[in-house]
Length: 313
Ligand code: SF4
Ligand code: ZN
Ligand code: ZN
Image: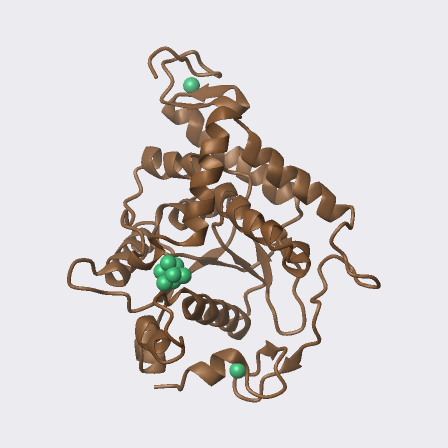
């Protein structure tokens, strides 16, 4: 890296981004990253300082970086950590992640809400998954369902106007690749940097959607934020990671291809390429009813998928 100098002050650079043709020293990288986040928030009209923002925090590098940037930009934020109960003898993944989320909140005098799945619903995510999976090994489907439900419930019950998640460009293009290969038009239609509130669903935004994963990682490292470095043990071998590997190989030979894929898709989406006749881009494709168990919106005629899965402890 010593061959490169900071694009702003000409000091030796510590981080270089080939696709942007930029390199920065530590101070100017941190400054650039915060400015870029502010531009994305503005570009997609995500939120304003008048919003009450709930930040979904996993204890990993991306979500702690997001919380850090949002409070530095002066947005009123609280964090939400969901302890999934993924703790083994080798790795106390959920408990360690909770430790990092709590430590960040304490250090910056911020409020962290914690929901412990086992304490609230009697079973951990792997336990809930074990009797609902019909032989599948990974609990990721159940995990996603439970996380989406809890995030929406906490946001709605506590009057937050917005939920933010730290999905980065690598996450977004991996999902985009999966949805494109199977041509899931309804999912493509809703893969937006910001989803407006609907009846029973809180507004959602992804302020890091245009940052490469290595850029969010560099922010966390250069800012010196301690975070959970281990991945969830169930992430190994996932389709999402396979797509990320393929896209990384493409990026090596064609720098900027991930950003082009995502930006071109968002342009096509904004132009209405994925809209069902008679719909606007952000409308749900299926009709929603109120779940008689939890009150959240569902497409089911009876209890929602979450209420069919769990019983309160
Ligand atoms: Fe949940 Fe699967 Fe992600 Fe682990 S890898 S946190 S189980 S969705
Ligand atoms: Zn500099
Ligand atoms: Zn329900």
